[in-house]
Image (spheres, rainbow, N blue to C red):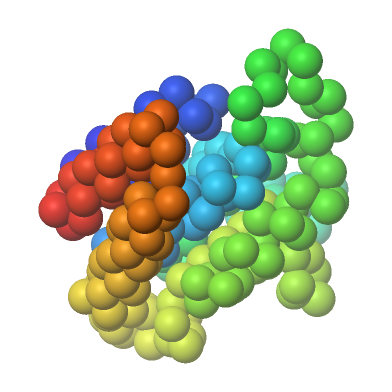
Length: 213
């Protein structure tokens, strides 16, 4: 199980507990990528909600049926074009997210339009893409909230039982934490007493996260 403290310092993100639940439901390879993404978002002052991850076949089929008649003809606004078993969500390899606004600003003082702001989706997606995640916002039929990690595997390959290498993703997160620890230790050389105390606590926090992997 993933505890909220593993991926971000306490009380930073508005929906830490909700994000942890989503993380616990996805494939380990995606989970490691998302842990790093959430930490990068925190560093960039972005708050985010991961509102859906793993989705059952039944849920997928119910979503596909929305906006269609009993014969599958489109009669209204649809949610997805993927039937059950044909979405990366069904294998824990996708999440849907919503930008929540600038980190550290109380929800009562945030503009709710930020939840649908195109620029915020793009900013989050850019960071995700540096980690090898695919963003649905680039598709011919854009799906802005969607991120998936298949590491080059097609949905056909995933349906046949193949999955991204979780150890490879874990190694990437491990390297990320070690790099941050190294940089923090370098900062100690030029820090005053208050900053030294802050960096020491930061290093301990990062080492705890690293040891928890």
